[in-house]
Image (cartoon, rainbow, N blue to C red; front, side, top):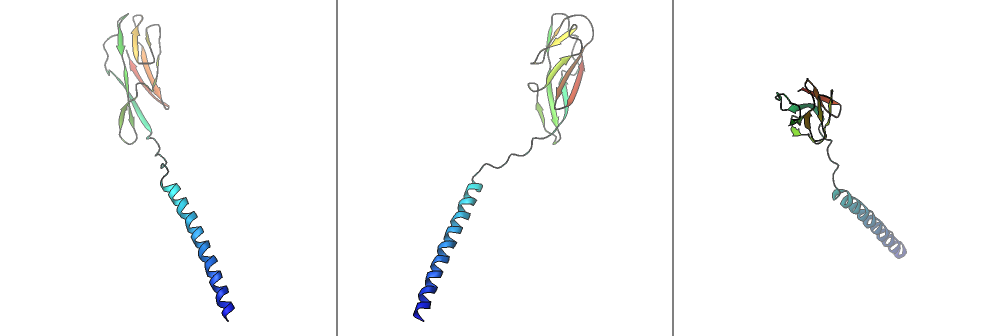
Length: 126
């Protein structure tokens, strides 16, 4: 009967060692995941673009005018997106616009300035 008791203690000892090892692995795994950087939330979706100034004065030949773009997002937030939009002029012979939003009058006439980002387009007549 004494033999069975020693054998039982040996089994208990191995079981305890196994449980400690498993607990150590679980704790290490938890520690690694709890200290990692959480995934960032998706950026809000752009809803509209507004080009300013809303009512620009005539852009005389040789004069320049700065245009800015403000984005409104689905969550209601607004931000200056002037640096992110792609701008074009529908008549570069009348007015050209550069990547910073600076338009230059080239000839008499009317031109539409267009700003595009994430599939959203805004136009302003000059």
